[in-house]
Length: 136
Image (tube, rainbow, N blue to C red; front, side, top):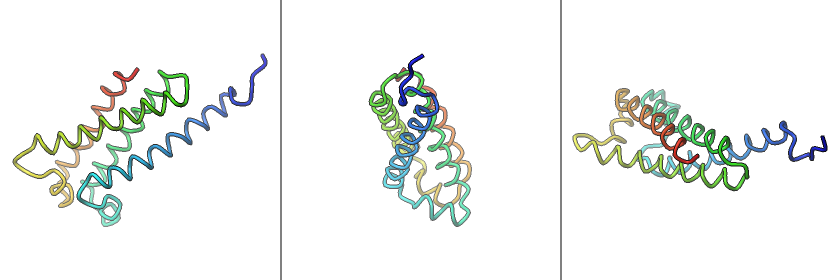
């Protein structure tokens, strides 16, 4: 068993973890740009609806990368497919706003409407499974 340093499971895990954390930070910055409210300011104020919506996005992004890690052997492929899945998740969020003409999703979440925040959470998590399965 002549295993190189980079093939060691501990090193691979640390590498995947580091890359996904970096991609998660980038995705959270992009979600901050897409939403009309300031996620972390609202969470600091105790806005549960924003916390639900943001938590769903975090779980969704991580779930997509989970699928990407299990299905792709190279780091570049894993990152590429994970980011593609993330773009689809953003598209789903925009579509959610478009498909609810009776109210503005961002405004309701910013106002603390937990029902809208929970549906946002559910959409992000639920679609992450569909996106994840499709990128494999």
